[in-house]
Image 1 (tube, helix red, strand yellow):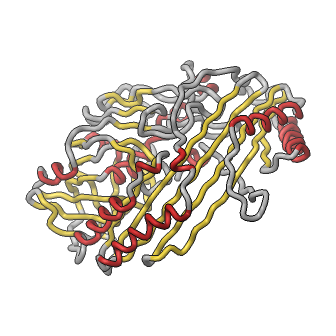
Image 2 (tube, rainbow, N blue to C red; image 1 turned 180 degrees about the vertical axis):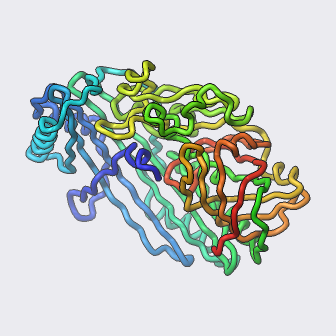
Image 3 (cartoon, rainbow, N blue to C red; image 1 turned 90 degrees about the vertical axis):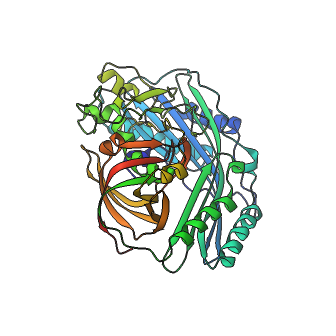
Length: 469
């Protein structure tokens, strides 16, 4: 995962529950606001910003057809940013008593005073308006270890019956955050999250499926296990296909694994610093006519807060229209440098990355994966990819490997499983060679993020060698 994506949301520090055996508690918006207001009262800075992140998360892990781990944690982080005469710094604590909050404020103030002036630092924004997003679902927040265990039990029972070995995770959780500053800004967001991932293993084959959603009711473990099981069975006794240029059919997870590498290239800072693959390409057709891409936090299949790290409302931005990169996203300071308008995509300050679109949505088509297979004389169907690295960030060349369900397609049908490949592929070239698109869906892939993407049938995808795995 890129450093920018890691920095998009700081990982809260663990906070033990107040008493042994106590049920995890997600603080209310009012509770978090009261903590933030106390911090503001303790500060003597020119400007003060307080971000509080709280979370309750639980994970059930299984392998060898057995649950072997169930863990839960409650977290809370208070992050304080202060400003003195164009100097700014941040300090954090995971305690909420007055003394700990005073220490965090004092640490932030001391750090800020010791830093050089930042000529690009803007005043903190005042009050903003945000769209209302329903991303908190009680069914997810109230899920119990027994709920997860029952779902996993059904999955591993199926695996044992089919002579397969199941491994994976089932996680549920909820988060709440507020962002408050001394200029009157107040932003709050609550969200739940659920994820199920399963790999079905056999002696010489495997299959995989994964889904995540804020709404647990949208996660169907048995259906995911059935898909993974079928892929494992279908890829037994894999053949070895020759490397080279192939027509490939990419499941949505595989598409996400590839196109997810583009997210930072749409950042104004990346273009300004000449680090984007879209430098000298904005306004030029560099992808196929059937490729349109937006950043849209309000999309019903997306997740996340309707505001950025500074509290600015996230705008819906058309990034690519019919193969032509049209627009970038901007934090406030970047927008001022580039004589543009902020789009509400900045990270919490101070940071080295500027901004990025965090809610990418591709337009889809109406061709199913089955129809893509039926229309292919000779090609390869891919489930997912892994160990993906950039070879050339300016030309957007990636390398990586296939895994957990790679199939040879002949005469419009799946002929056999095949051994995995290493690929070396220019992503802009790939998006210029998309022959068919499936419906856009919320997909989860190798990285721990999600996008709304379609399955794709792509011409001339470049495999360089057969792997040993």
